Length: 216
Image (tube, rainbow, N blue to C red):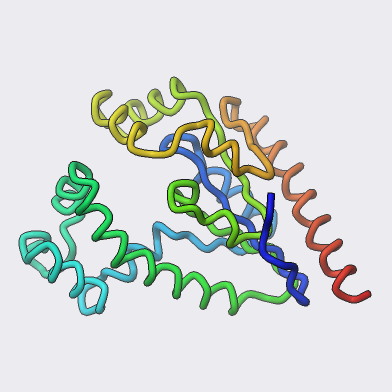
Protein backbone atom coordinates (compact mmCIF):
# COMPACT_ATOMS: atom_id res chain seq x y z
CA UNK A 1 0.00 0.00 0.00
CA UNK A 2 1.42 3.37 -0.99
CA UNK A 3 2.09 5.90 1.72
CA UNK A 4 3.40 9.44 1.85
CA UNK A 5 7.18 9.76 1.26
CA UNK A 6 9.29 9.43 4.44
CA UNK A 7 10.17 12.71 6.16
CA UNK A 8 13.66 13.69 7.20
CA UNK A 9 12.40 13.77 10.78
CA UNK A 10 11.82 10.66 12.86
CA UNK A 11 8.21 11.43 13.74
CA UNK A 12 5.85 8.55 12.94
CA UNK A 13 2.26 9.48 12.08
CA UNK A 14 -0.43 6.88 12.66
CA UNK A 15 -4.06 6.93 11.58
CA UNK A 16 -6.27 5.12 14.11
CA UNK A 17 -9.79 4.17 13.14
CA UNK A 18 -12.56 1.66 13.76
CA UNK A 19 -16.29 1.28 13.53
CA UNK A 20 -18.63 2.79 16.09
CA UNK A 21 -18.59 0.64 19.21
CA UNK A 22 -15.37 -1.15 18.23
CA UNK A 23 -13.47 0.33 21.18
CA UNK A 24 -11.19 2.78 19.40
CA UNK A 25 -11.25 5.23 22.30
CA UNK A 26 -9.97 2.57 24.68
CA UNK A 27 -7.12 1.75 22.30
CA UNK A 28 -6.20 5.41 21.93
CA UNK A 29 -6.15 5.75 25.72
CA UNK A 30 -3.81 2.78 26.04
CA UNK A 31 -1.52 4.15 23.32
CA UNK A 32 -1.29 7.46 25.17
CA UNK A 33 -0.31 5.53 28.31
CA UNK A 34 2.48 3.96 26.28
CA UNK A 35 3.73 7.38 25.17
CA UNK A 36 1.85 8.33 22.03
CA UNK A 37 0.84 11.90 21.23
CA UNK A 38 -2.91 11.78 20.54
CA UNK A 39 -4.72 14.07 18.11
CA UNK A 40 -8.45 13.40 18.48
CA UNK A 41 -10.43 14.42 15.38
CA UNK A 42 -13.78 14.21 17.21
CA UNK A 43 -12.61 16.56 19.95
CA UNK A 44 -11.22 19.01 17.41
CA UNK A 45 -14.48 18.82 15.43
CA UNK A 46 -16.28 20.05 18.54
CA UNK A 47 -13.76 22.82 19.15
CA UNK A 48 -13.99 24.29 15.64
CA UNK A 49 -17.74 24.89 16.00
CA UNK A 50 -17.73 26.39 19.48
CA UNK A 51 -19.60 29.69 19.96
CA UNK A 52 -17.84 32.60 18.30
CA UNK A 53 -15.91 30.48 15.79
CA UNK A 54 -16.06 30.89 12.02
CA UNK A 55 -16.97 27.20 11.89
CA UNK A 56 -20.17 27.68 13.86
CA UNK A 57 -21.08 30.71 11.77
CA UNK A 58 -20.69 28.64 8.61
CA UNK A 59 -22.86 25.84 10.03
CA UNK A 60 -25.61 28.33 10.93
CA UNK A 61 -25.42 29.85 7.44
CA UNK A 62 -25.91 26.39 5.95
CA UNK A 63 -28.55 24.96 8.30
CA UNK A 64 -30.25 27.92 9.96
CA UNK A 65 -30.46 29.14 13.53
CA UNK A 66 -32.63 26.18 14.52
CA UNK A 67 -29.40 24.20 15.00
CA UNK A 68 -28.47 26.49 17.91
CA UNK A 69 -29.44 26.06 21.55
CA UNK A 70 -30.81 28.91 23.64
CA UNK A 71 -27.30 29.89 24.76
CA UNK A 72 -25.99 30.10 21.18
CA UNK A 73 -24.02 26.85 21.14
CA UNK A 74 -24.48 24.10 18.58
CA UNK A 75 -27.43 21.79 19.20
CA UNK A 76 -25.66 18.60 18.25
CA UNK A 77 -28.63 16.23 18.57
CA UNK A 78 -30.71 18.54 16.40
CA UNK A 79 -28.02 18.90 13.75
CA UNK A 80 -27.32 15.18 13.90
CA UNK A 81 -30.94 14.33 13.22
CA UNK A 82 -30.85 16.60 10.15
CA UNK A 83 -27.64 15.34 8.56
CA UNK A 84 -27.90 11.69 9.53
CA UNK A 85 -31.05 11.26 7.47
CA UNK A 86 -29.77 13.19 4.42
CA UNK A 87 -26.45 12.32 2.74
CA UNK A 88 -26.40 15.62 0.83
CA UNK A 89 -26.76 17.65 4.02
CA UNK A 90 -24.16 15.48 5.72
CA UNK A 91 -21.79 16.25 2.84
CA UNK A 92 -22.41 19.98 3.34
CA UNK A 93 -21.58 19.70 7.04
CA UNK A 94 -18.46 17.69 6.27
CA UNK A 95 -17.32 20.29 3.74
CA UNK A 96 -17.43 22.89 6.51
CA UNK A 97 -15.96 20.94 9.41
CA UNK A 98 -13.39 18.62 7.83
CA UNK A 99 -11.07 21.33 6.43
CA UNK A 100 -11.07 23.10 9.80
CA UNK A 101 -10.25 19.84 11.57
CA UNK A 102 -7.46 19.17 9.07
CA UNK A 103 -5.84 22.55 9.67
CA UNK A 104 -5.96 22.20 13.45
CA UNK A 105 -4.70 18.60 13.32
CA UNK A 106 -1.67 19.68 11.28
CA UNK A 107 -0.94 22.46 13.75
CA UNK A 108 -0.97 20.02 16.65
CA UNK A 109 1.19 17.54 14.76
CA UNK A 110 3.76 20.21 13.96
CA UNK A 111 3.87 21.18 17.64
CA UNK A 112 4.81 17.63 18.70
CA UNK A 113 8.41 16.64 19.35
CA UNK A 114 10.30 15.46 16.28
CA UNK A 115 10.73 11.93 17.66
CA UNK A 116 7.07 11.47 18.61
CA UNK A 117 4.69 8.75 17.60
CA UNK A 118 1.63 10.85 16.72
CA UNK A 119 -1.68 8.99 16.66
CA UNK A 120 -4.55 10.64 14.79
CA UNK A 121 -7.84 9.23 16.11
CA UNK A 122 -10.09 9.59 13.03
CA UNK A 123 -13.47 7.83 13.11
CA UNK A 124 -14.21 8.29 9.38
CA UNK A 125 -10.69 7.70 8.10
CA UNK A 126 -11.82 4.91 5.78
CA UNK A 127 -14.92 6.69 4.52
CA UNK A 128 -13.01 9.85 3.64
CA UNK A 129 -10.03 8.14 1.98
CA UNK A 130 -7.50 9.56 4.44
CA UNK A 131 -5.16 6.56 4.76
CA UNK A 132 -2.44 8.08 2.50
CA UNK A 133 -2.01 10.97 4.95
CA UNK A 134 -0.34 8.70 7.52
CA UNK A 135 2.77 6.55 7.70
CA UNK A 136 0.56 3.63 8.69
CA UNK A 137 -3.03 2.88 9.65
CA UNK A 138 -4.27 0.93 12.68
CA UNK A 139 -7.80 -0.44 12.58
CA UNK A 140 -9.55 -1.44 15.79
CA UNK A 141 -11.75 -4.35 14.78
CA UNK A 142 -14.74 -5.96 16.46
CA UNK A 143 -17.62 -8.09 15.28
CA UNK A 144 -20.97 -6.49 14.50
CA UNK A 145 -22.43 -8.36 17.46
CA UNK A 146 -19.87 -6.85 19.80
CA UNK A 147 -20.40 -3.36 18.38
CA UNK A 148 -24.17 -3.67 18.78
CA UNK A 149 -23.93 -4.93 22.36
CA UNK A 150 -21.65 -2.05 23.35
CA UNK A 151 -23.79 0.61 21.70
CA UNK A 152 -26.99 -0.66 23.31
CA UNK A 153 -25.52 -1.68 26.67
CA UNK A 154 -22.96 1.09 27.29
CA UNK A 155 -24.26 4.05 25.29
CA UNK A 156 -27.95 3.43 25.78
CA UNK A 157 -28.84 3.48 22.08
CA UNK A 158 -31.87 1.66 20.78
CA UNK A 159 -31.00 -1.37 18.68
CA UNK A 160 -32.55 0.30 15.63
CA UNK A 161 -30.46 3.45 16.06
CA UNK A 162 -27.30 1.46 16.68
CA UNK A 163 -27.78 -0.66 13.56
CA UNK A 164 -28.49 2.44 11.47
CA UNK A 165 -25.32 4.17 12.64
CA UNK A 166 -23.25 1.06 11.98
CA UNK A 167 -24.75 0.75 8.49
CA UNK A 168 -23.88 4.38 7.70
CA UNK A 169 -20.16 3.69 8.17
CA UNK A 170 -17.68 1.75 6.07
CA UNK A 171 -17.94 -2.01 6.29
CA UNK A 172 -15.66 -4.06 8.47
CA UNK A 173 -14.01 -5.45 5.32
CA UNK A 174 -13.39 -1.97 3.91
CA UNK A 175 -11.63 -0.88 7.08
CA UNK A 176 -9.48 -3.98 7.20
CA UNK A 177 -8.43 -3.43 3.57
CA UNK A 178 -6.64 -0.18 4.46
CA UNK A 179 -5.10 -1.49 7.69
CA UNK A 180 -1.38 -1.92 8.20
CA UNK A 181 -2.08 -3.20 11.71
CA UNK A 182 -5.33 -4.68 13.03
CA UNK A 183 -6.15 -4.73 16.74
CA UNK A 184 -8.83 -7.29 17.60
CA UNK A 185 -11.11 -5.89 20.29
CA UNK A 186 -13.41 -8.88 20.68
CA UNK A 187 -11.31 -9.69 23.74
CA UNK A 188 -11.16 -8.96 27.48
CA UNK A 189 -9.40 -5.76 28.55
CA UNK A 190 -6.24 -7.50 29.77
CA UNK A 191 -5.77 -9.13 26.35
CA UNK A 192 -6.38 -5.80 24.63
CA UNK A 193 -3.76 -4.17 26.85
CA UNK A 194 -1.20 -6.82 25.89
CA UNK A 195 -1.96 -6.39 22.20
CA UNK A 196 -1.65 -2.61 22.38
CA UNK A 197 1.73 -2.93 24.07
CA UNK A 198 2.85 -5.21 21.23
CA UNK A 199 1.64 -2.69 18.68
CA UNK A 200 3.40 0.12 20.55
CA UNK A 201 6.69 -1.77 20.40
CA UNK A 202 6.21 -2.12 16.64
CA UNK A 203 5.49 1.60 16.26
CA UNK A 204 8.62 2.49 18.22
CA UNK A 205 10.64 0.10 16.05
CA UNK A 206 9.31 1.69 12.86
CA UNK A 207 10.02 5.19 14.16
CA UNK A 208 13.59 4.18 15.02
CA UNK A 209 14.07 2.62 11.58
CA UNK A 210 12.78 5.79 9.94
CA UNK A 211 15.18 7.90 12.02
CA UNK A 212 18.17 5.71 11.18
CA UNK A 213 17.30 5.77 7.47
CA UNK A 214 17.05 9.56 7.51
CA UNK A 215 20.48 9.82 9.09
CA UNK A 216 22.22 7.66 6.48
